[in-house]
Length: 283
Image (cartoon, rainbow, N blue to C red; front, top):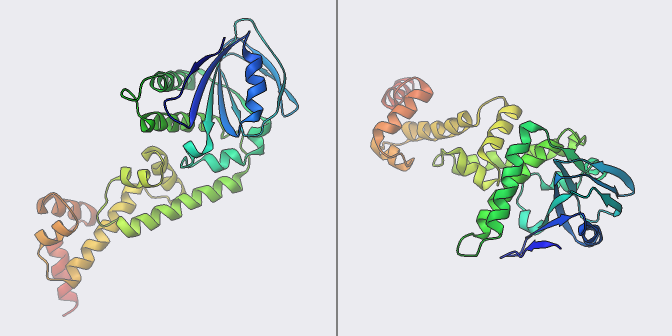
């Protein structure tokens, strides 16, 4: 018997299969234009995926892209399989989705054995999503499940990175993120000093965005943000007669003393000293 957690919203369906019901999974999965995350928590599974034979062991993940062909399925008697049927529009803002869907490497290498270092975190996230997904609308929201699903996708995607060899596609996606980040920084940087603001705008985790910016630019993301804030502050100090307090207010600091500490920490001198030095040089 299939135990189906009926979704309280569109976008995600979760089903659990055992040995006597898993054939239904094999019949259903290829007919859906969805991304499938399959978690083998117990037992073993044999099947052909896109005509290639696979032996799936316990504690494995299978990522099945849309239009994947499944045949010749058999399994051990103790099989326990959970399948997340994910509509693509439900995760359309997930930053790595384009890479996953375009990857022939994943298509023909869909199974990953989860090592102990990642197993506990991934399996606990799976359980958390299942719990929230089965609750009523009053207890759980679409956004809650969606954010948890993004966290799970982030964890699972890392496991597949060694499989993905299309570095040009990865590089293109990374460059798109970086370009978009600097567009946001140029537009909002004088007011938004939180990494979380930019990661939210880009639908990424703060950790992922921070590591990507550091890797690709050689500088920490907070340094880029500070640079933009200070650049705008210097322009106001040089070109206006606004007081330090007024500049602080324009930059939306809580108070002028906080702005002064921020400016000095980033430049090594006080805001007043910077303004006086500029005036002396331009006399």
